[in-house]
Image (cartoon, rainbow, N blue to C red; front, side, top):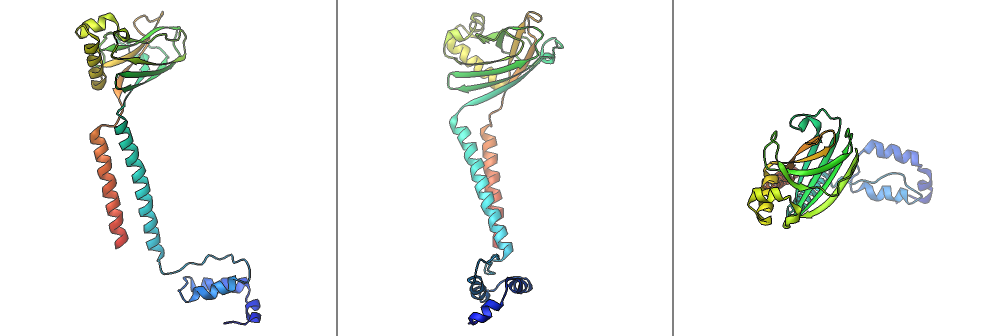
Amino acid sequence: MPSNSVRRTLSHKHLHRVLKKNDVFSTAQEPLVSLFCDLGNCPYSITSNRFPPQRGRRTLLFKRIVLTGSVALALALAIAAHADTIYSAVLLGSNEVPPTGSPGTGVGIFTLSGNMLTIAETFTGLTAPASAAHIHCCGPVGVNEIVAVPFTPFPNATAGAFDTTVDLSLARTYTAAFITQEGGTAALAEAGLIAALNSGDTYANIHDSNFPAGEIRGQITQVTPEPASLLLLGTGLIATVQIARKRIRT
C-alpha cells in the first residue's frame, strides 16, 4: 500500500493520465483508484469492465422498449376497456351540397358512451350568426338528409363553442321526422343513429340566415381504434421485445 507521502505526491492530473492511458478499468485497478480518491473529492467516474459498454447499451435499449411498449399497450387496452366510441367531423363550406364558398370552419367531436352522446363543437368565420346546428342522418357523403339531433341551445354568433350531452334513449333527443323515418320509436331511432354514426352516414351542419340549408358541414367519422388495430399493436410490441432480447443474448 502506498505511503502517505506517495499519496500526496500523486496529483489529480497524474491520475487523469493514468486513467486515460488504461482507458478501461480492471477489477484489480478499482481499489487503487478508490484509494487515491479517498484523499479528496474525486472527479472521475469509476467504471468496471465486468459489464461491457456494448452490453450495457443493449440492456438500456431493452428496458426502454419494454417500458415504452408497456405504456403504449396499457393505453390501448384502456381505450378498449373504456368502451367509448369517438367520432369527429371537420366542417367546411366546400362540404355543403351545393358548396357555399363560406370562409367558415368548424370541428366537432362526438363521444358515445352507452346511451349518452357528448357533443363538442367549435366554429368560426361564419358570414352570419348561426341560427341552428344539427346532426343529419342517414346517408353517404354528398347526400342531403333530414335533421336527426338538434343542438340546443346553439350560440347565435359567427364564432363560438357548443358542448352538451344527450340521452339517445329518449324521444326528446330527436326530431319527430327522424323518429318516424326510423320506425316510430326512440329505441329504433337510437339504433338507426348509432348504426349510421359507425358507418359514416351522418353529418354535422351549421345553418344561418345567409345559408338556411347550411353554411358549413362535415361528415362524422369514427376515430376510435378498432379491436383489430389493438391486436396488431399488441403483436408488434411483443415481436419488438422478443427481437431485442435475442440481440442482447448474442
